[in-house]
Length: 337
Image (cartoon, one colour):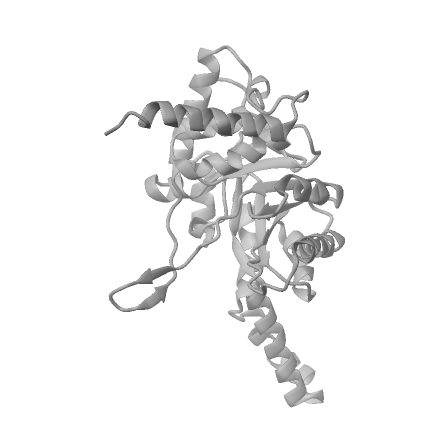
């Protein structure tokens, strides 16, 4: 078997297939199944800024209500604290138990969009055993007066807040909708991001025309969605120090191979593991291994083989591909009647 060991965020992984943040990691048993399925690391489901804020606000109200008696009351009822069912308390407990239960890195996920004390929760996650923090900055600037520069600065500030709180590696899960994705990646890299995860999927609502209502929902990704992150990974490969993680659109081994050829350090997936079960990670890895062996090439040699060449201007390179695609489309469909 080909050596598939991989370095991601400075962590040594047994292979480049990683279980991305999703519903399969909500229990210790689920985390163990993912690790047993063969992945190189597990990213937990996200702990949300809103959950942390609500708990902090509630505690502040209770403390104000009881004033001096609050601390005394807690000393009489310590189990009331240790057995709280808060989202953050449950998440920390799961990190601690999950990290101890598996032999691959467990990466915690923090999801937020504003500056604030919630970023300090990262320290507790690291102390609980998280090998790294994936920072999911899910921010849709609905305020149309907010400038692109302000949006970018918010990302950098949140990253700085988390980096100042922990000693473990921190990756940033990015949106593909910056005016200059490459420059934003470069700035995050310079600001200390240990890795970039490309890309976050914004979950746009749909409209039910029968009930005349707006509906939200989640759909599993499809391979065609991988083209956008794959394009930017190919551009960024060897241009930044941060690790590059691909996510979205992984369904078959060939999707993993394509991401590796573009330059991804690791390939993350949740959709394929939901569709076929955690053990499907082994199928993805077997397919990657067979492809490498058939071509007698190592994983490191294959990684970035089809990235944008160092001596090519990425914008010219990408535009040439765009023009070529349109010419091909005209030749293919132009004669249809």
